[in-house]
Length: 100
Image 1 (cartoon, rainbow, N blue to C red):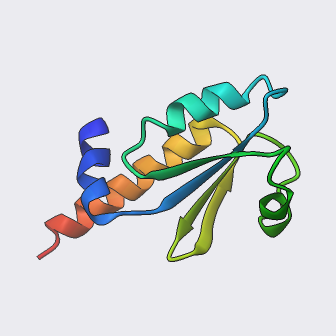
Image 2: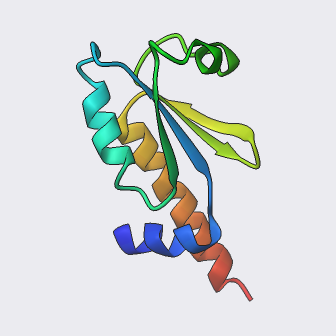
């Protein structure tokens, strides 16, 4: 599925916001995964960016938000959920590219 994600990255350019905190035990896992993605990933510290926390209504960390054209299209809290969403987007892109 990595090849599909890389193919998708040529036509799919979301911004991925990852809200984390130093005191959060699961944040490092999400952060480590997110930075490997071929997209515009921004790691945002929950404790020092209260304006963004309010803007995106963040109530827990980790929280991952995917923006497309500056609109929130997906929100999750785990690597598994993020991976499932991106895999589904990759499959859709592949199917669309195969359609004449």
